Length: 168
Image 1 (cartoon, rainbow, N blue to C red):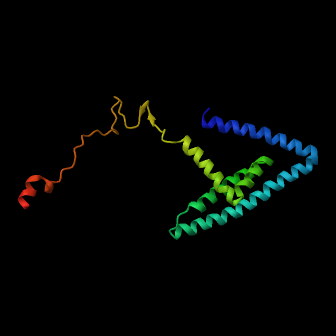
Image 2: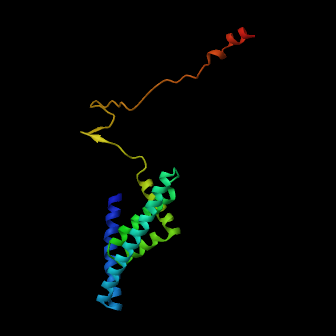
Image 3: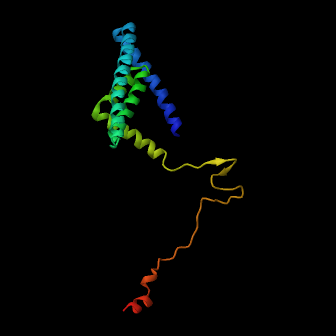
């Protein structure tokens, strides 16, 4: 199963789990209270994420203008962006996952896991085809990107035996 298939499968599973959790909570506390709780969590989480994301983005710009490395603030901004998207999707499970992205010591680890997963999936397997021809190849199959050469060891002209004897 490819990456798109896994994402589609995860979305379908999430939809069914969200409906199940919504029905279970609605049976326990009532439908209007459940709907109100869902709307409240989504709006409150989105507002919190937007405010925190703005602060993290400003800190990243300040570090960038100061010539500092952006690692921490870039990871924080990425985590807050993901949390904002998850808060925007209605559901208790996605809201819970979004809260995990807002916790300072967890957001680094979660973003690291996401980056590691995608870097392993997208590791150097890119080939460009145009009109059934790979990039770098002409229509006869000759590849212009391949460079072949013969290598010889470097010989220093000042280091040969004649010059050494002449200098002595």
